[in-house]
Length: 128
Image 1: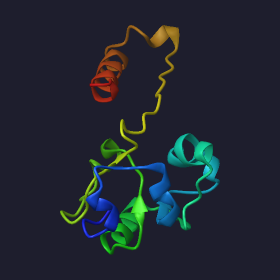
Image 2 (image 1 turned 90 degrees about the vertical axis):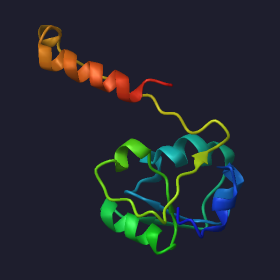
Image 3 (image 1 turned 60 degrees about the vertical axis):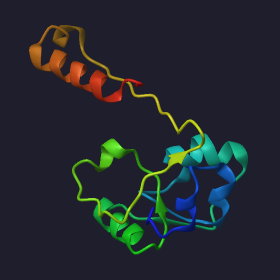
């Protein structure tokens, strides 16, 4: 979110805080959006406005203009230039955690590039 967004004053974003926001998502349907499926839907919260913006660069510009908030893991934004005016906030007191899975053919498990990928994946996504 933009640092001037009223939610920036909070330590973390509670589920009830989403009822008054413009939520910028990557695409519809909502059932494919983690924050909706895991956090908002079970608590029967629907944001004031929801816009699907499939290009991350455009979504970041909208957030930079303080036109809404976007829920995205930090690792997904590493390859983008995130303006200093944007801030990160946890969703919920403990954050919103997701499970990631890797599937590898048995015949490929001994290949070095596969082992390196699994090692990097584990380092990046293990809970710290």
